[in-house]
Amino acid sequence: MAATYEARAFGVRSAMPAAKARKLCPDLVVVDPDFDSYVKASRQLFRIFRDTAPVVEGMSLEEAFLDVRGLEHISGSPIEIAIELRRRVQAEVGLPLTVGVARTKGVAKMASKMAKPEGLLAVSRSGELGFLHPIRVERLWGVGDSTARRLQAAGLATVGQVAATTREELETILGRAGARRLHAFALSRDPRRVRIGSGRLSVGAQRGLGLSRLRPEDLDAALISLVDRVAQRMRKGGHVGRTVVLRMRFGDYKRATRSRTLPQATAGSEPILAAVRALAREARPEIRKRGLTMIGITVQGLGDGGAVQLELPLGRPAPALDDALDQVSERFGPEAVTRGDVRMKR
Image: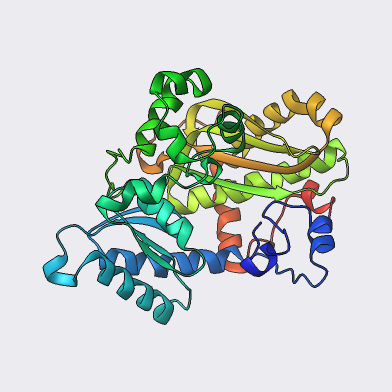
């Protein structure tokens, strides 16, 4: 799921098979995930964020944009606010915090990335281009492996080289939308504002499967387990969603994504599982041929569960079952009750 900076020094990366990670780092220490602890820490973290700035846009459990404009006479300069924020998080949550300070979201994100681990980097308005242009394209926020390879094949290895290219030339490499976004970013043009209350846009979970070829029933058990985790988190947060995404990483480490839009937004385990199973069936020939090392499920386009029109339970599993399982899990832990077909595979 993740690798510390100490492990990364040996070449260990997130989503890497455990056997390969241990070969690279024989003294590797593996710690079981504890999502409930992560959620508790996240709530403490965001309480401090909202106490620091009036406008906070959450990006994940531990990442957010804070708009501190206008706080100079109350809390000090942006750098002073960042210093105090890091101090409070360390003292009250017990976690180190990396902060990037900049005029725009894109530069702030990159500053935070460059300041890791446990640092603070501020980029002035006049220094934005000087900061951005030496950065290699594969390190950019939102640039994946495929996009980076296309840029590098065209001789564009750094942000500065992208900035020196016309948008029309970039369109032949990335298409119109991708070229427009990347060219604007390379010139430090980012009109996006920090949005208060934008909330989560998706909920997801993933699982490494190792390098061995899976039997269909083992893959199905993994899908069931992931769907239960995702759906339970959605219900706990009062969210519903319509777009179900299946993410796969094959034995050759190439990735693929498939999605399906449901007729109605839901947080029910059964309709999400039905969509995921259908996507997995479509991908079965490719999985047989190439093997599968990682599987992930995401539900996107989240909305407020209280605003969705309810359906009559015409032949569908009663939502009361999901509610009952959620209550058991909340009280006794996520492993207290599992589906029989998942438990049989353990």
